[in-house]
Length: 146
Image (cartoon, rainbow, N blue to C red; front, side, top):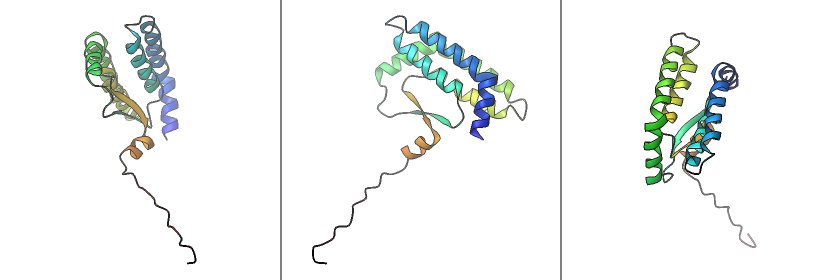
């Protein structure tokens, strides 16, 4: 099901979003100051191209003060406008039954477009493994002569 949704998404909305975010990332990476913002644009491009079966998570310890400053600058100059655009597109897509999954994907993109620093994109399986407790398996020892 994810594959079908991703292919439909890519044909309808994913390719233009990917190309737009990718082009913005290339332009931002032309300057040293824009480099971290270009990396975030590439993150958005990859998520915009293939969103189904993936989640955006905040990683503990990934970020700090620099991420907060980056998110603030991103929010002021680009994030708010990108998020509003994704939310409006998501609402329009949700007007039809067939468009609801695509509208939800668009709204998930809005959250990442608002503040991308300090977040990472994982597959659903990776996210599930992240929340499982780690098990230590100690092999049984055999005693000599037993």
